[in-house]
Image (cartoon, rainbow, N blue to C red):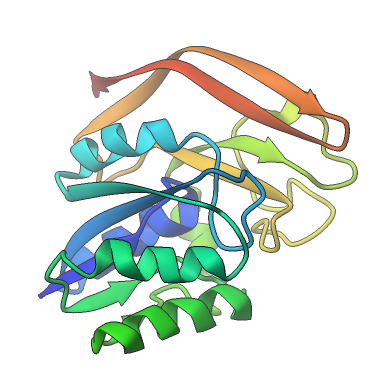
Length: 209
């Protein structure tokens, strides 16, 4: 059963793709690249890594550009996936009602079931501890430029322990279910008054030891 997984390459969408595959589904990774960075729905940072992540997980991968404008992007996302012959939609929503409702809406419009494998499942923290995850965006008080590119760990911020609510964004470089790991060879950090992002200039897959 082909299930489209909305995939940013962050910790939540990556583990969701793995859980769907572990449950017997065929994940089809779908990455939306918002032209507007501060999308209500989508991550806008380090999306260039998704191609490498998909290869490391041996999963089909599609990318689409959308506006990133609130609500408008939802209809754009729907149009993008209409031709992919999907039998379900899944996303890495953890606690965001906004995201989950809109994933459910897209699935309903397509006439297929919607899946949220980590919804309200704080126990995924244990799975994250087995993965190599870095911070690619910080936008919360108390989180500075020095954290960009650093490894994610639960409770790294003063807010939600798993960064729910847009306090930061992540990228997965390695996991037990990756056949190879991602190595960032060149990057730079940019600070925009109240938030910062890690720009990936060069990255590659490397064999594991």
